[in-house]
Length: 204
Image 1 (cartoon, rainbow, N blue to C red):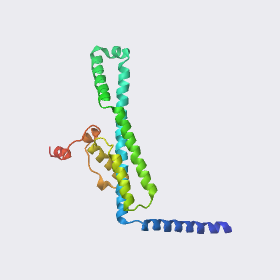
Image 2: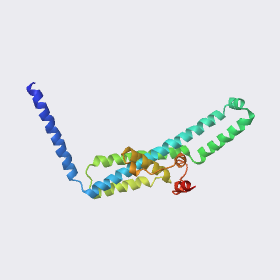
Image 3: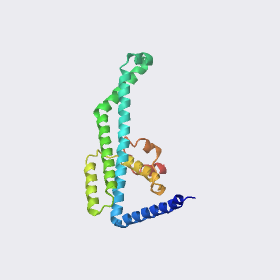
């Protein structure tokens, strides 16, 4: 064993001790209340980002499907393949989808959710970059969060709960997962079911 190889482990140990000391100095500079407030603020940012990404993807998918069906309906060959009995039904379905596409402005709403998701992610990154934050700094970031939140369209509470469950599972906290039936989960992107729907269903 050479002289250099015997010194290397000592150098690694010194570096490790230095990292531990540095981390302890960082932790000791945190106030418990400030640390907790920062934790909840980061959680809100991550939850909001997850929610808006789900809405963006769903609305974008529906918009793409409606556009594709509209293009297909424009081809005369479709009517010939489907026959008179089915072509009317298909045409009616396309009219409904394109009407939804226009009335609810799916493309614009998808873009809005995309922008909101990006804004919440940027805010999360700013909080992480700030390092140790005192109460006044946390208040500033909370104000920025609320400012971004003012652009939020009406929120689907059940979809928020689904996002919370996913985050709890990702953080290995199964005790924080709230049971949601498959039927409510299936339509969470469309509307909220009443909170007592599961209990009523269980009693039947």
